[in-house]
Length: 229
Ligand SMILES: NC(=O)c1ccc[n+]([C@@H]2O[C@H](COP(=O)([O-])OP(=O)(O)OC[C@H]3O[C@@H](n4cnc5c(N)ncnc54)[C@H](OP(=O)(O)O)[C@@H]3O)[C@@H](O)[C@H]2O)c1
Image (cartoon, rainbow, N blue to C red):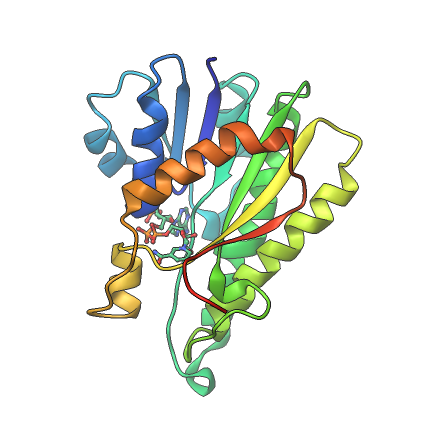
């Protein structure tokens, strides 16, 4: 069945792989958002069912984003994949580091959801937030990730709060807390670390989850990781 799918943070890594996976179904229409519009245009040139749009979560412009979204038609799936990771010793983190992390990873995503809500398919749609195992309560923690992981934990919390507030609607929201995936973000934070999954593998999981699980789950924070705790 054809779906209108919005991917926030669709330019690189996992987001790029999600766009490519979703585009394999020629009936889908995929709308990729990120700051690097030219890169997306180049990457997705051969994909006729993908359109690319500029979005900077750090300097979120509601009116411009709404104008872009209004053109798209009822949205069946919104995948909030964009993220920003800063790794610094706790006492070296600046006010700006905290603000940037929270704006991109939590506040900007909530603003996107506010703006997209009227355009979501009111007969049934699914919003999937991409968080991290670092933001999942009781998981293994890593030094230097206080700004990143706490902002990702805020995204988890938002998922529960949204699901409660919109429980009588047909818009469902869930959150996937990813473990390590081999992307540039991971390589920059943990040089030399070999992740158990490639972006294409996790993108397939996220795409399938987004298409199917909105009928069964709401407000769930799901660890997607091979490691324990
Ligand atoms: N890789 C891992 O091991 C891992 C583990 C747990 C969770 N995650 C999460 O998975 C998601 C994807 O990460 P990745 O590893 O694929 O990293 P990535 O390649 O760095 O991708 C990050 C994406 O976020 C977008 N983004 C960053 N800042 C933005 C801004 N200000 N406005 C709009 N978009 C912005 C980037 O697009 P532009 O630069 O074009 O704006 C890019 O598309 C993130 O939310 C990350 O926290 C990753």
